[in-house]
Length: 194
Image (cartoon, rainbow, N blue to C red; front, side, top):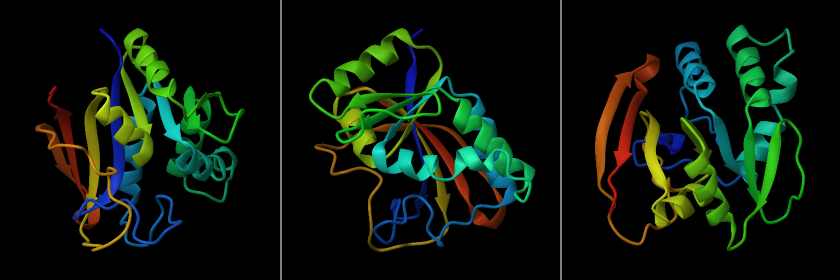
């Protein structure tokens, strides 16, 4: 069975991933409790690889490798640091040509989607996707298999959307839902083939 691309993000109730430019997945509107972060850890450790756009990758790169050994942080944050650092990663970027932390760089060009399609075809298990630009390109190419959304109880009204203007409606099937502290809801959807 080939690999599956799973786009997972924290979102607002109106499906925004950032309120202000530069939040890069860390806005104060998110309600990430210990319980929720432990869920992130469980799901991240089950991935076989991660594909990330440059902005998400650089945000992660700037914190998680050092967090893995930082004794001042709670155990679940150190654990996520170890998971992220060790996980095989593909960085999709026009500007970077190299990266550390078990990361291979794929140029964000016409061939990038073809290379990601090859990864999916020869891979196994769930491949996490981070970043709206990469997720939108995979969705448009018919390569995005699932959405894993952690919906926070807030309406932002403006900001970066989950996807960059899909060309047409995409139907989904609900696979799983759960609730966490502070009113955060998990919704996992399969993307119906068009």
